[in-house]
Length: 581
Image (cartoon, one colour):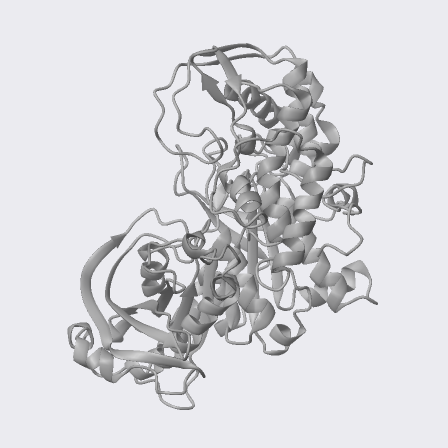
């Protein structure tokens, strides 16, 4: 209940305008409160572009990052141009009823190649008493993705587009949003207004783009960031190249049988058998994946649909049955070991044991009656469009592609987008000096962005900021403003249907607020079970680098130091001459 203290503290200082939400939500009123000319150098706001839309008692339900609530808000949109550029950028700000405003502004990000997450994030911001903002990045509309205009007509990179997606658009939306919030809610000069960020996946990368470059925020809640962009996007193709190299294309059900066996063995390693792998590090140390050879599997035929992540997801599938083969285990084992070049040097890390093999999902060919390669569309586009500068998102073949080819692709993308999309700058000293705080979390069974990615960055920041301190002392120093949590059993930016009893940090923003506004630093992260029979159950998550161990019938884990386990998360990415942060 600690976060409520912070909410109360902030509410006591609210100086919102003495108007109702209905009065605020008029075009004339909103237009009169637009940020003043010169708020952001080189930007001109179109005063005639303001549109207001009132929403009353909207149900915020089963939101990944906010508890259930009923919210009322005014959606205020307007547009601006960059002087001399001839572009048009749209921003939207969801304003709560002035009586519930708690002197907060919330910036939000997107996912995949989208720069915003629509109403889900900003309406959640309203529930914490914030005006919450999003942007279209200047890509044409709030529903237009960043790759729509990635290339210019002459076939070269639209660098204005890249920099807007990389960091600039979120920054502009934040600076304008803070000024707009103060005007709209009549926040008096000298009254503290807190600025926050919330986002996951691409939204997580966007959050780090703000933390690493600017000092506009007081706090950021960042999940499973898709930073280390070159490595991460090519990682989506790695499973496909493994299948092509080993010339085996396992039915999805066969790989799932390996995952299920992994979960069964590794579940109790934390001292509690609950269907959740909380210690994927112990799983790496103790589980022999070869033990799954011969395990029977069966999956009924499917008509497809239902979406899902990874190549081939949502496609119709025939009945699948058999026994796990040595070839399938070889594919799974090679995927889990991570990308190495042909000299055996590590280029990147892969997913933790118990994560599903989403990137390796194959497709069924009805004509041949065989399972075939299904190339990741997400990974493929970063080769065709972002590296080769071809106006297509489809990589049609992996013929001739080796592990060395993948390393070359990573290097090429890294060089091209080091200053825009890579987003791994480890020197956070300016952000730290500003007094701001970061809550960073990552699902341990994430099958889209390896959990080791977040651990590797955390360690890069630790050693960059405190190169002369011991591990323990540097960890303590870093945790004064930056805390990382690995979420047991969780998938990509949310609960995991394969491990439904694992909690998810749905109230991370409330804990961040408690830290920033109330000085209550979270020693453990609160989590809520979102799926299955235990839906609604509260759990607690250990702060990295401590690892969870349950004793007896305890419902809260002991958070312990385990050197051998922590070592499994450390990688020397020696396939590259440059350090990989």
